[in-house]
Image 1 (cartoon, helix red, strand yellow):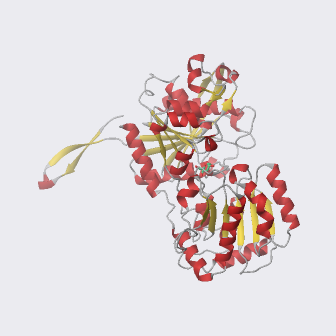
Image 2 (spheres, helix red, strand yellow; image 1 turned 180 degrees about the vertical axis):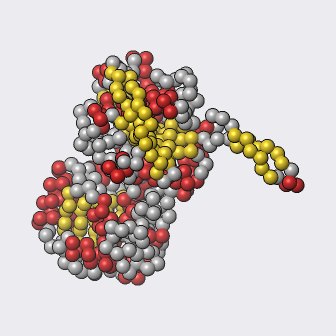
Image 3 (cartoon, helix red, strand yellow; image 1 turned 45 degrees about the horizontal axis):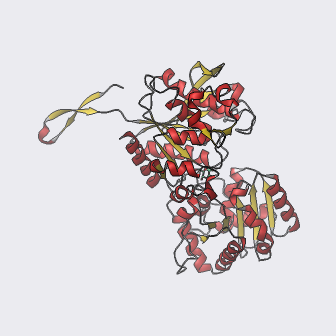
Length: 499
Ligand code: GLC
């Protein structure tokens, strides 16, 4: 890249020429990003961390994601078509179009191929391995096409792990690619991108020479490959970084994590506090702030009305907003749910997931019609209404890399009850520890249903003490979950990678 020269006034009005170096560039590679396409926390992070970094101004930040069919048409109409080329993938030669769009200071590149991405949903297709191999390869081919070579390629989760593996194998030594460093972030170690060896040559276009890099436990493991070849890797909280050295949390990868521990960092995610804001969110029945939280009672009453629950201000509303999967600690809830419902409470569940849990929560809601509602959906507007209209947010995850819902709940004045694992341990400080005065939530420690029940009952009891509860709401709402601190930690990490 060219080096610009400029002149600057220095002391004693003497003019000297100063070199202004171009900003170093970071390219995020990920399978989802808000507000374009998302299924969960990854989309939140890719939608907000690059924005925070761009705002800091230290790095030029860009993002590459697939152009899925459900990317909103209003956005699409503003995308700029930059051109197209073919992507060689094993014996295939596939079309790839590149669109770009500058959004909130960040340039997004959209990888277009209708065969791979014009489908219902983002994932869950039989050829997901090939689809994301295409995506990863296309992103790398795009760099030569645009003559844009970032300093750091920052890939996220297994769907973009191959971009790191390709960079360090197929593209090693190639003009422009050689200097690119790689950072790989694990958002959830449970999903590793495991495949049979038949895909190595046939779908991924990788020769047997790289078998060692991706082989793990008798199959191809893309997350393992990316961890191995990236200059650094990270995960989304400090506690989780520690936990995944332990087989209980690592889903088979603890050995790989420990072997590569020297290049691992844990950085807690932030949230976009402009989006998750009780004072700004237009989806709420009424807006409120930490210092004037009175309107939260309107949110609660309207929620109860909307869900056809008795409109009672003095009954605590407990909400559970989550993917309905075992990782979220739903087995603990199942074990003691009827004990919780035996209290004077109302419970609202929102989420989709495994049919085992969907059926269970529907069954219970039918049975406890006067106090429990289950809504099987992924609905952000409704989520805002539930977050703001409830009092207690229950999140007893078995493991939780970071977790964003507990932070969102806090921002809507809803006090979380969490199990102290991963990012839940790092973001929630326990009111129920020691002197019962500070804290922004309730914590329990062991994966034990009755320990959870005890703490849920403590939260219900504390809700009855209006003065104390008001203080807790304030603490929760005032907690700083912005990207400020964490974006700086990423910058330090990029600095380290770039030497
Ligand atoms: C995954 C993790 C979640 C984390 C999110 C964003 O969804 O399960 O804990 O908050 O990624 O990093």
